[in-house]
Amino acid sequence: MSEPRRPGDRARPGKASAGPPRRLSHVGPGGAARMVDVSGKDDTERLARATGIIRMTPGTLRAVVENTVKKGDVIAVARVAGILAGKRTADLVPLCHPVALTDLQVTVVPDSTIPGLRAEAVARTVGKTGVEMEALTAVAVTLITVYDMAKALDKGMVISDICLEEKRGGRSGHWVRK
Image (cartoon, rainbow, N blue to C red; front, side, top):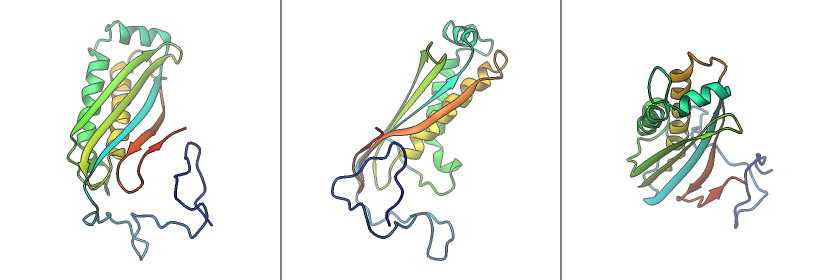
């Protein structure tokens, strides 16, 4: 039986849809969690793009955009926090390999239709393992920092929809969320 498909997954060309279930790479033969040995993998160019949002009241969004929040420039501080967090992912997520990022870009864009902010992180490296966790961590901490800086105005803010949008490189190739 094949693994169940999740929303956003797409079939990968050349992969069979039936067969034995895949083993989880972070689970050893005895069932214990373990770090994956990537020493046999080739170095390849890798990219991961993640996104997320934070919903807030229109007044809070206005204060963030107009830079009148007492703690300072929310968007600038949140971007830097996201970059720092992405660089420290292996310190936060126990089984992640330390990755030498070649680039990590974080963008934060106001969106009045939410109302709130949209965050995106694009992480890049050349190495033996991907940078999905670095991109996801960067987005999460970016949005948490927005919450921290604006919570005096709006304790009801909601962080949501943090997800991987795209990954490139490695054995599994290119994947894009539909």
